[in-house]
Image (cartoon, rainbow, N blue to C red):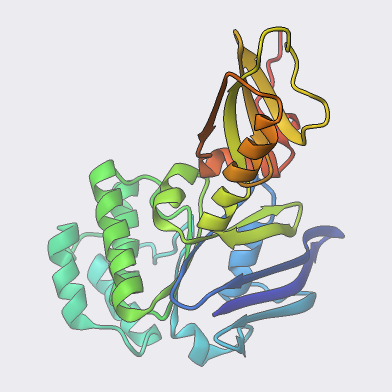
Length: 298
C-alpha cells in the first residue's frame, strides 16, 4: 500500500504540505483531487522520490521512498511533464527503462507497440503531445510496475485512446494487483475508474473514502413542498439549496434514506433523490456554494 502520514513540506516558508496524510490500499485505483495549488503534485513528487519531506513519513509497501533505489525500481510514474532525453527515439527510451526497471518486459513492449502503433525509431520530441503521452504509457506499462503514479495522465489523448489506456491500466490492477494513484482535474473520468478518492486542499487531505462511501454520505434531492411553503424549513441541515419554480434542489450530508425520512415529516408533494457526481461532491466538500462558480458583472 501507499501511505503518507503527517507529511510536511515548505518552500521558502510556504507550507505546500501541511500535515497531509493519505492511505492507498494495495491493488486499488485511488483518485487524488483538489483545486490548483492544493498540494497534489507535491505529494506525487514525494512518492516518486523527487522531494524529501521536512516532517512526517512517506512510504510505499512499508518502505521509505527517499533514496530507496530498489523500491523505485517497482514504481512507474507519468507526470504531467513527462521526461525524455531530447534526441532520444522511443527505442532509446525503452533501453533506458530496461536499465531502470528489473521487471521490464520486452515481450510486453512489443505487444503494446501494436496498441499504440508508433514507430519506435521516431524521435520523441518530434511527436505530437498526444503521441508523446502514448509513448509514456507504452514504456511505463512495459516496466511491469507494482505501483503506478499518474499526474493528469490522459491529458492530450483522444477519446478512443483514453479508453484504451484506462483499459490497459485497469487490466493490470485486476490481473497483476497493481496499485494506482492518479491525480486529475477530470473528475468525470475518475468517477469511472477509481474505487477510492482523497480530496486535498491547502496542503491537507480533507477526507478520503471509497467512492461508494462518498456517494452514500451526501445526497441531492428535488423536493416540492405543499402550498404555502416557499422556503426550506430552517431546521433541515442543508449544505446548499436552489429553486426553479416550485422545485427545491437540496444538497444534504447524509444518506438518501435518512434525508428522505426527514423530509417526509413535512408531507412534501414530491421527494426524489438524485445521485451526486464526483464533481458535485468535490465542490460541496470544499465549501459548498462559496466554492461554486460565481457570476461577476463587469
